[in-house]
Length: 206
Image (cartoon, rainbow, N blue to C red; front, side, top):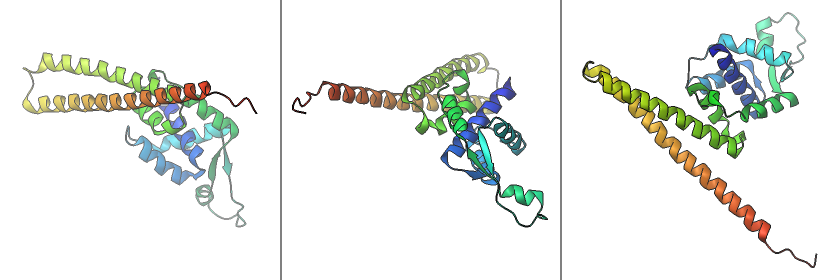
């Protein structure tokens, strides 16, 4: 199951990056490493099987340059291939961006979903942020309980490490609270703007 989850995150990351612009495989690898490397060690060996599957499913296409010299090495030709999103790929990306279930609250899933929040509906963004906060609050309770049980039995370095982990989670919860507050304020403002526009008297002369 973990592998399947990871594959879903990689698919979202690849489609999201290709939605921004077509890319060569090498450039895509670099961008993925920046994006996914914050959450896990990205294995390049997983990229090309993912691309192969996306090609087979018609979600992306290869743009191969015309190469007059047939003796060029395969690796050289491959480095010139540009991957582009298809219409089906764009539709698949939009479907993935509307998913706001538990997989999008976990460390890796949340990071990738957050990276593409500019392409995500406001209500979905809010659900993901609130889900992430709930998940971290559960984690905080577990860490605090563990600290309470082990505080007297661990050395000072282990205790420092546990406290550091606790502070990191608390900091992210505060950050999420700020984001959630901002999202709600923006949605309320948009709702008020919509209502005021709807209630404006219309020019009967037209």
